[in-house]
Image 1 (cartoon, rainbow, N blue to C red):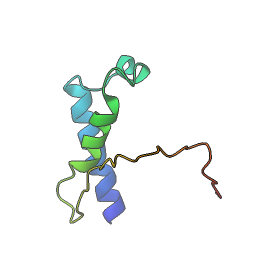
Image 2 (image 1 turned 120 degrees about the horizontal axis):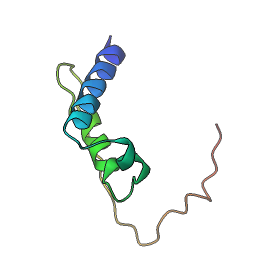
Image 3 (image 1 turned 45 degrees about the vertical axis):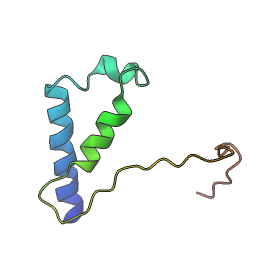
Image 4 (image 1 turned 90 degrees about the vertical axis):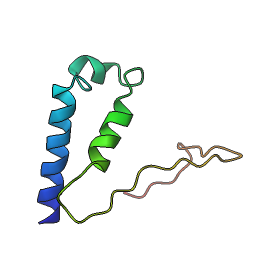
Length: 75
């Protein structure tokens, strides 16, 4: 129930972003310079009609950045 409602809410938000000109094929190709990350984050956070609490991303400034290539993934 929640998954289906969540999917529909995200789809509505993405469709709105496309209609408003916030997302397009050109912008997806130029991901970094078009602020696509923020638009998609908004689409995930702005969910109405389901009892889930959306939490925005929070960035933490570290003394030494995490090296993503040294993380041992076990998938």
